[in-house]
Image (cartoon, rainbow, N blue to C red; front, side, top):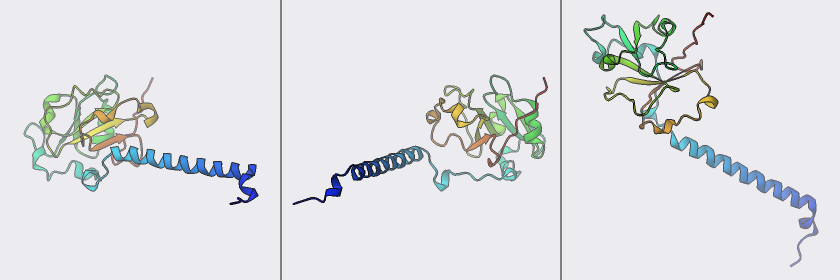
Length: 182
């Protein structure tokens, strides 16, 4: 059997090797993306579409407390923010229209509607020992993923966080960074 002469030309071999490289890298990238997304659970029952008003709805009897004014919801700052409690500016930006209060007093764990865990201050050996199914566990980050990639969120129990608070405007609860005066 005699093969055509063009199969052995440099141009054809270069084209063939280029095509094989493209196929190999596209398969590798597809496998890598599939593996990355397989670790996350994006099924409908674990995906939360949040309405701000539903977050603090008065229709949830679990969160009515005699220690709070009626319909006032509690946001518990579990970790602090770079070692400090969340500043009052957050209370102004988050609670102004939602009738809530932000505290770092862990005695309010059972009455809290939302617990906030700052990504940089999160310690896996310091998690709440109680969780009501209606509570939101929010992961707070003002950093881009490039600056938080070293933190291993895979250590979190499955379904631990059901809300994120980030700088992204498309986030259901986007937090603006407060202005600081020097």
